[in-house]
Amino acid sequence: MNEKKIKIYKALFSDLICTKESLTKILDVTSIKTVENNIKDIEDIEYDKKLRRYRFKNLLPNHIPNEAFFDIFKSSIVNKLLKNDFLLLEKDISSLKTNEMIKTDQLSTLAKKIIMFKNAIKDNCVLEVEYKKAGKEIETKIIRPHTVFSNGFTYYVYITYDELNEDNIGEERTFAFNAIGKIKPVNYLNNEVLKKVQKGNAYGSFKKDKFVLLNLNKYSANFFKREILFNNDAYEIIDEDFGTESITVKMYYNSIFEIVKIIQQWMPQIKIQNDSELKQEVYSIIQKNISNLLEE
Image 1 (cartoon, rainbow, N blue to C red):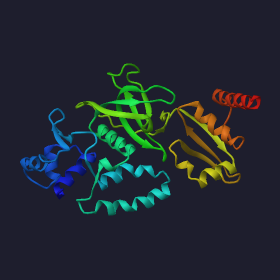
Image 2: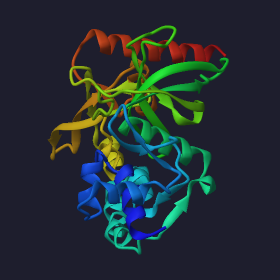
Image 3: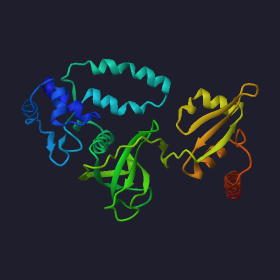
Image 4: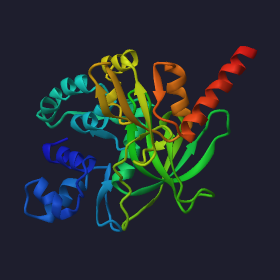
């Protein structure tokens, strides 16, 4: 591919809206006809009259520039210290010769799915996907994808069930990529933006008013610091006692199971601060779990 065609691929993989007019600036040309001539022989790209801009014909194009691939998957590095080191490569990658491209048919199934979802989010595309919950049959869902994120091990996507879905219309939830099967575009929306900036976990996006205060003693606090676990979006340090080395954190959550898990794993090194109905509920679940364990 020549330099201008690579620039077009990079533009379509970016957040830029690729109209004919915007591409004249990207390609440094003065004529829309020149833009059309540069694109007409690229099998991956078409002009969408409904959206009034260019997009990939398929959610998974045949090629992806190294720079675009790096940008999509750099979120896999969750350790912020290592991520800073990793990002030192970004400048070198962006300055590579423009004919550096990856054939997407050589990528893993996971990478292909993530690229497809990234393109669907950018182009506001409603999707039909196969989804299989653990222990259940494969279901077909009509969804609106919003954000792709990773906890360092597993990739997830925040979605909302579309009005074409059979049930749960408008409900937001999280899909794990390893449970997603076939992916098919349903409709490209020209009056809505699907992309959302969200933080959360496998249970959903975090709500600022849904949190619990945890007290970590010096043993658990030192472990969390050493393993850089406070980098996780779920935790916000609100107080640190340098005398006792204890820390109080605000932990955002979606399911009470998340709180039970961390208290149960660390008891008695981590405790819920103050008396509350939530505290009593969590501790009751843990007591029941211990009783069931001892009875076996």
